[in-house]
Image 1: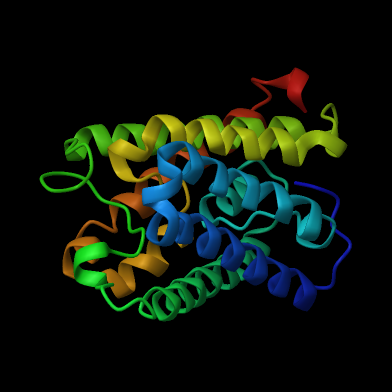
Image 2: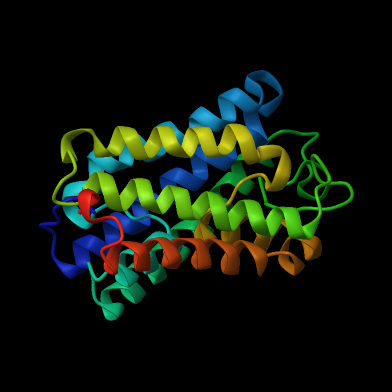
Length: 235
């Protein structure tokens, strides 16, 4: 993504902090402030958190803060698999840590219950937001991540404009949330899904596979499109 000047250790730390921030403020906006800010506010919380981190840690690690994005960048030939794995470990740890911190904060309110109020976990089916089917959830997550990855790779490629790439990527995440919150709560990011699911209970954990598989398929597909040169003008 962005030009990266950090050491391997600083890149991992940056990815941990970036993912932590995205999950804490994105999921936190739903859990703590959702009744006040609604779907529109939650969508912007995720997008603005990403924009902030893009400019804060982008020069260090590239600000992937998403395992699907790291695998998409790898599929596009822009990073090694070993580096992608290093990023993914840091991202997953960041997402889990953020969900744990959010749980502690939310539990400070007397009437909060993770079983009732949740932790911003993703899902589908009966009892979850718009009650969309598994097929609809999978299709949305795969297609939305593909589009998200196209914006990321195009805006950070040699023909892109790095100075505004973070803004373009963040606003794309806002649009994805505006459309998709009622479908799946929006993942497009396995680390964003893993953290809350681990603390939210059995249903979230049983459905977690979709929010790992679908985003990865979408991101890798976009990466391969760029690698094959089908979008030459964006490279």
